Image 1 (cartoon, rainbow over the protein chains, first blue to last red):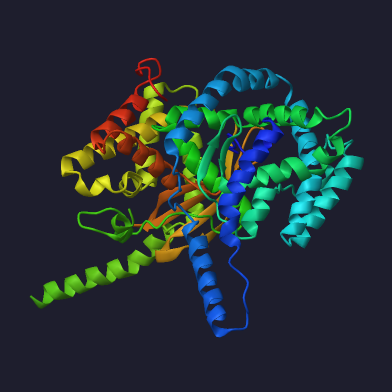
Image 2 (image 1 turned 120 degrees about the vertical axis):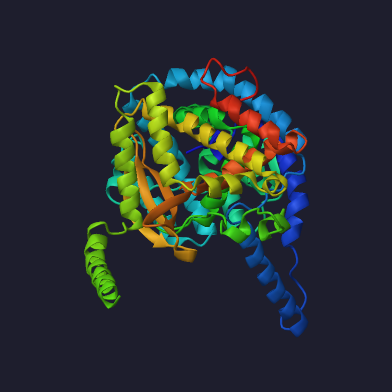
Length: 298
Length: 210
């Protein structure tokens, strides 16, 4: 829910432009993980590795509930956010409102179909993340739903206990420990960050659906899929979007937090039964009369 | 004198004997029971089509202020500006915050379409807190995972955060509020005005950024 943006809206932009941006972003952020080499057995290196690991744990904790979001180009992001709101108000929202008039069954099937098209790429990313069980679930879902589910329009796999999940290259990079980088609001595509922009370019190139249609008479299909996904998810989340728009005093800040937390949750792949992130709220953490821990952190 | 002591002793004894049974009858609910009862109370009290807007709002306010720790949530959501605010400003802010929540959520119960909160379990947090996990069943579409973070309070519980699909409302609210404060030169009064603007009934609200 609440995916005002994200990879579901992918492929709307020109792939070429995205790649340029991605290369730029890649040169800025992939460098961060290139800190291995030298003789790994030397004690000094061992100590460094240990420190890096501690640092990674600390970053992982910092990425938990409510940590600050790095937004160095906020004014630019806010500008594109307003552009996107305009596009939403005059194009996406009216289109999805028309789509919303279709019977629920038709819309559910559309969602199933779009999800099924994404599944092969989910399998590949599960594999790259070393998630064997999840990859198996996704493979089973793809075959069951494509064959019994009539090309994916129905989701019998879910009834059989294979719950759906989505993976993409940005999540794989996250699982590998690549940091988010700066928060970015992309024109048309919405919320992203330094890491996800790279993931997005990889998705555009390597998603089997895009690979199979590229250079064929179906080369329009990725764009059609992106458009359909945008309309479908805008409709599915219209209530939540309306609520956010109505209740926020600063919609940009709210959308930024919601999309960042959702993205972090997608990357954690947390067990639904585990305790979700919530901030420290004991008296000492809350702002009081004198300096407290929360104030010190501000 | 001894007689009075004796009487007192009897009285105490009677109290001591009576107390456990009274407690058993009125037992402290588990965190899950608390959420179950809360959602039941809310659905019974707020979804009737026969009550008007103001009545629904006042009923919601009563349930909300009893079940939620408004001061803790409000303090957290405001963040640093709380520290420098005067007592009057704090009270004014907390009032505006409460009104804003009431205005934002009360109306949702008016077009109630059979949604339900089904608790599925709870986990212990730090300081005797509990996280009650539930599924929000919608009329259509997949259920939404909602976790209620509760803190012991007297003989029951109070909610201090609601986490919807891994998104903490306390954190989201804090980001929203602090952005508004920052963009208005750090003035708490600007946030209070913004909250009041959101509280005004639709139509009466001044046109502006939403």
